[in-house]
Image (cartoon, rainbow, N blue to C red; front, side, top):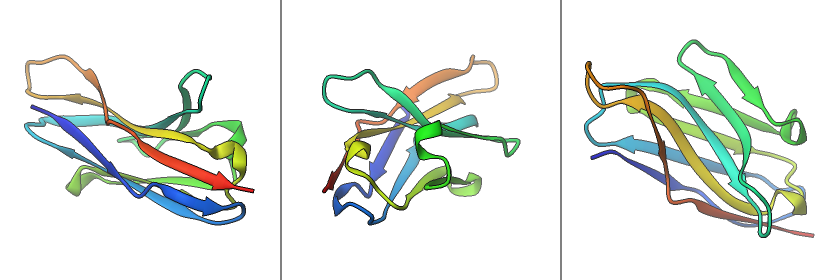
Length: 121
């Protein structure tokens, strides 16, 4: 069984920083991409940032220049460094991973339970 375990959320003032961490645990054969999504109250879940095995990174326009995604492939972890936080960054942040649990299995999408980030003005 595969789980994505997030940590690092919390309450911060505008202009502050937070670092989110996510560990992929369980029986994992390989991981393709890992990333972060967020969902604010009353809104749809949206992409924040993703990083592939090949080193490609993708960011939402709203976080470019403020957020940085990084991976530790050996530890099966992904991080999101969030700087210059704004009240509009307030949301539940979800870790996502595209991975295979065996050589013969297909690539599946997995989600963490989410961690709350609240930015006060």
